[in-house]
Length: 409
Image (cartoon, rainbow, N blue to C red):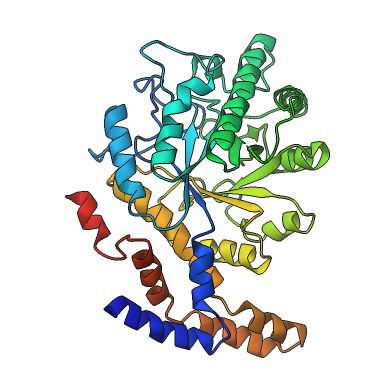
């Protein structure tokens, strides 16, 4: 018996005193997928036109020299990062990470063929695939309006892009046997004082209706829509607000809401919102980022809010209804290490939640024993969670310590 297993046995015994089955938690960990975004590796530059630069409220800061310089280096670095993340994983792609076969393919012309190499990659690496239409960093988005533009030709272009992305996501689901979440985030809005806040939202709803008109089996692909409070250069008005998408998804019932942890007021928390969707049997998508200053997209760490989010999902037994994905990009540190660190942090928070003595705490709550509820919720924070994490990593042949040295070499 190795040292890791010896330490795990001690942790297992301690957790058992609180009624927690650590073996069951480890088994569950291998069944809960985390969708790891690909764009940390190259600051969301993509393969379509890497030299164009970001626009549409998107910005990546930092000048660490680790940014991938071409497709081959991108795939190599991504693979290295994924090897450091234990358990079941998916890979989230943006539409700009296409294979264009040496010729320019505009976004209203992309097909599943442009992403077949990612299906091969997913099969080779035992991954599922999620997808994201790219409604920014394009000439037809430079005025900050796409699906809600007053110009019908602009809307037509982006509607076609949205339709084609749905077919690509469906293709992923069929090929890999895992549901692919197709997440739409649009940057539309105004920088300054806005008079008519209704018309653009009416246009956005009409565009969404057209994109979602064709019915796609949710076994293969689910459409989600990601809200945002505001973006860079769009500080006064965002068309796709949280309230807009929540109402649209509830009324149309053919899509779900994506909540990004950095897309709300500084005093709002995503953890407090989750049960309001689950109570109505809704699925939802979660984008995990770390908003040091609002939507700063810092690399995810195991902070209090991340633990609270995962605890909410665990307490409602909803890991099959909440699609968990990462979303951050920091160019100030090694991008491969950043990619792995954030994904590992999400996994740690999930395990932390699974190890909570929920039955014990709920029993105290139901009996009105609020002092024991609080005391034992505090004691639980000091249980040897890290020893169980080490065991999880070892079970998956992933280093639990020293992994960053392998990357930095």
